[in-house]
Image 1 (cartoon, rainbow, N blue to C red):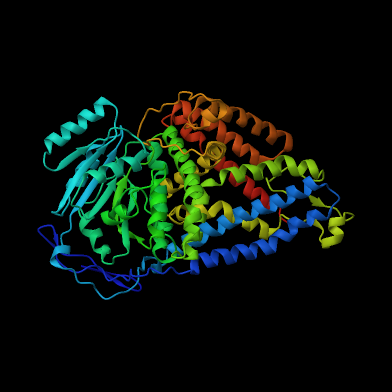
Image 2 (cartoon, rainbow, N blue to C red; image 1 turned 90 degrees about the vertical axis):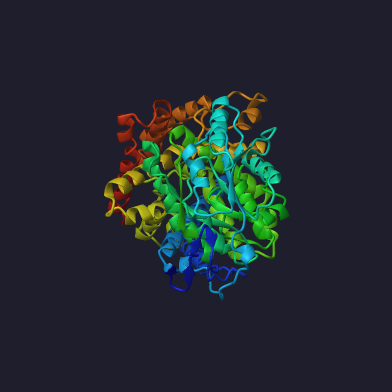
Length: 593
């Protein structure tokens, strides 16, 4: 069977008795040189915006204000440019994802395989820790392929889960092997490394999380992509499990497919292909060569960087689809968010310096890793920007007016030194060009949902509502997660699928508190409630509607945390932040000069 794309033809293998019978796909994976067009365009547009807008802001340095005031202006300009960069980042990547070029993996003469290579051995590793799902395990050994075996790497410490796993292994004796380690060091990576050290004779292995459901032709479809010696792993597309019984997951789970369809899809041609922790077929010899998975919380990103430093690549395959669960509750969503933030920060500190220095890696991939990883760490700079606009700048520049948008800038008077310097009357900042930059930053991350809103209006509008709520509700705790890592240099690994969480005080004062997961700690939830009250007061005292969005988002977050998403009133109330945001944007547009 052939599937034709814009630049190349990919041949999927025919099978007979579960064996691959023909040659691998026609892909030039010998070098996998990356095209710099996408990220080059992002940087170019961002620099144009920076040179166009920044002088307006820096013009405030002309005034007689003290050094702290001038520093706050410089910091304000830097932070605005940071968020404008990510506006272009999301916009350009999403636009490129609609191009057929993004599926181009190159061209090559078809590589013949010897008979020994036509049916390589594959180990399917199912990882679990008190979150076992039988449906996911069954998808592992229900494969249209003959030479594979399923291993359950069980880190569970609850007897009920262990008993269910043992019963299943007994029921399917010969198809499943259970491996348990004597300790739980090294998080998920330690579990995988221990399991792989105990199995022999396999050329490839696959990693499944507890909720990963593989298609029947998963092995058969992915193996042909290893037709070059420098391919380390092949990552399949992930999508929300349509059968997941959680309204919270169903309303936000579109995010899974959005990321793979519009971000990862571009990376074969234009960026860095990362292993996403599950749903990927991998080479055993390369795992052994680099010394196993780094035993950190975000082992997938760390392993991907180590693999690339050795000169190997990952490949993303869009049309092989696995199902996965989305965090079913708001508490579990917060827990996963903390793992991602602290784990990503850990990877950037520990592994990015050597990745950056490597001469085997293109600047495009280095830039991609930094930009993509840093996009998870923006809550702290965003709150800093909020602090500047809400408190610091009005304190130093008494002529600021904040009776409307968050970024409403000072009114320039004819007699001021600033007006004499720039020769512009009126509000120097809120013109149509500045307004469009605000829209870019707001809309670009949800552009795919907006594009699809006419096809599936109910679901996509509901996703936009939930995305907006989560944005406002999670800023404070996300910033705290980053601070927690910076203070302790410790990441945390919480099992997303677990319903219970150990939140006991670890002692040792503030550092002891931050060394454990903090997102769902009652002290943090209480801090969010207090912060919500402060945002309400600030909004009333400054007549700044935008602060009201944060106050509403935080107070709904507190109630949602305690009452759950099944509460019908809360389901309705989560739409308020989006309504306020739309009102603010319309207000800005109406008051433009």
